[in-house]
Image (cartoon, rainbow, N blue to C red; front, side, top):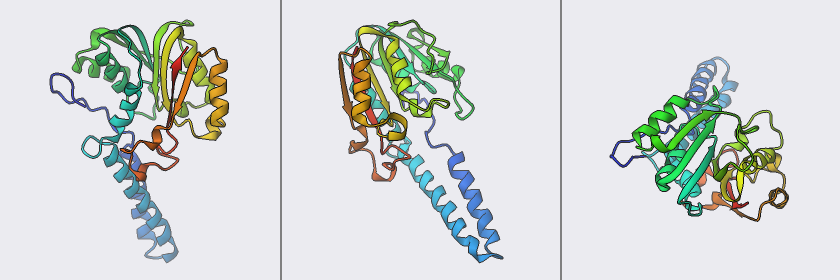
Length: 254
């Protein structure tokens, strides 16, 4: 993604190099072992297939490929209601792409990005701050460490709450609907929200109609669900359930 000055900000890829290298190494190891035990050739082929799949997925998500990662993040922006000023919260900001994009979209708003920046991701608060500075929005953006399970903010503090592919990653929370509820807690009455996640995974969120009913029960005036996994720019290769095949977006007004 490029900023207004033409500099490119590397927001990293959802498919890490590790996801390619590890199965590739295992494929090589089983290939060598299969020279003595031919039955291990199947395992070698399987790990090779996994490595190739994730390599292709990484390219699809990359700006050097189809740039699907940025396009998926862009779906959140596309569904935002107009907010000329006020406060915005981005839950699970990662290395800051959505936080920064919202700040650039709404030049009078202040955007806060929050994340735990756990060991499974090569992200940090300092990286977010560098990216915001590169994009020229650091004066209107702030980042802080915190959990989506218990946000360190008062009830009704924000005019807009956004999140992109975060809630399903929260460990120690069996019912992911609680993360949605917590996100809506810090939203002002009359405020708007756009939350995108793997909402079609029943093990996380239950049946879709039950999820929407629950959201309405939390004092939400308007709520709408959109199957963003059906967007035509998403190739079939990454529409598998463990990738973005269960992607959906919930938006509305509190």
